[in-house]
Image (cartoon, one colour):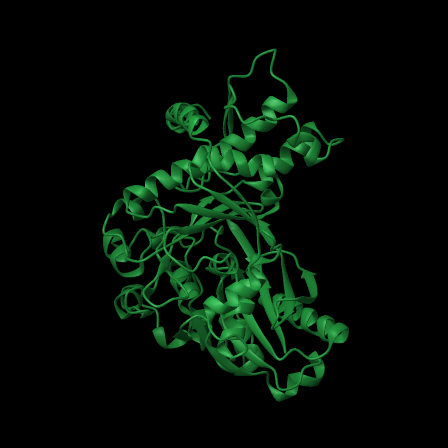
Length: 480
């Protein structure tokens, strides 16, 4: 049996295929363009759909039919279709500022209570309101409003359904009932009937439409709802019980912890941590996000050490806390600030500062930023005691040991270059009975490499530095 996981991102989509033993069988990737103008960041849904079809066709040409395909996508961005399934309007990315004024109309406390998020223009509902206010003819023609997961599923199967974790990125899902909130849709004056049916992650959507089978090289293939991409990364990292979290260091740095109950501390929403239904009933995750994780490391290498490898740079650092502090807001501040105008800052540079000192300082700054986030989450009762590291940053033993020392928890690296695909494959395989259950699937798909344990003496020294690090943002913000 061949199990595929489609991962649709903002700049490209990929299809990764495994068998029931967890063995990698093949992968295909297709890149596409994003349009970015002042305040308007858009993607063409038809191009994305063609990209998905392309990776399916390329993969089947290489390895043959795929028995089941799960679909996981990025969040917030939606597609409007008319009665003939034609796209009516370019899809706005979460960084698009349209919908800002509409987001301010909501009662923040009520939205947090229902939807588990603080009102923000990144979410789908304010942007749908913006289209209705500014392009009413588009809104009236729209028969369906779909996020990219349910858009791809609908175009493949004819069945429009969205999983709970992605629906939560609209700012319109009741996270306790796991259904659309009539109250929020009524306030927004948006017809909830235009939205897809909300289903649990890992729900069977149906079979690929007969007219597409030959084109895509498929035969009797089942399509399954995956989830929001961050949730897929958590599941593909083996996050199946509370107290665990995945630390993904790709372009961005994102820590995703799992927990049992919705926090009653309103401060969690004020600091922009969302509450997202997880793949287990009654379980949740949140996202602690820094916009530059691996991106900051790559910027440093490209700018100051282009002739050196990452391994050579890693050899220049040691475990002792550095004398330089870096606030890594190279692309604005993520949680808890959500400040797109914040700038990065280096403090403590002297004539004795070396290339290795600067490199280590960037690594430490990214990690202190995550410690700041974990400190806020602990105040709300979310306290992960073990991290599983994925992404490019997980290939650096020096950085993983640094993270353990700074964060004060064990950090385990995974032999899983495609954790999002693995999470989607787990859901698709369980839905179709290929895997017995999620726990069994995780034991097959998730492979640990090495665990790095914190040095308590160094952790205490890092805490002293962290007490100063916490003051940098409010000191630098008025100056830049």
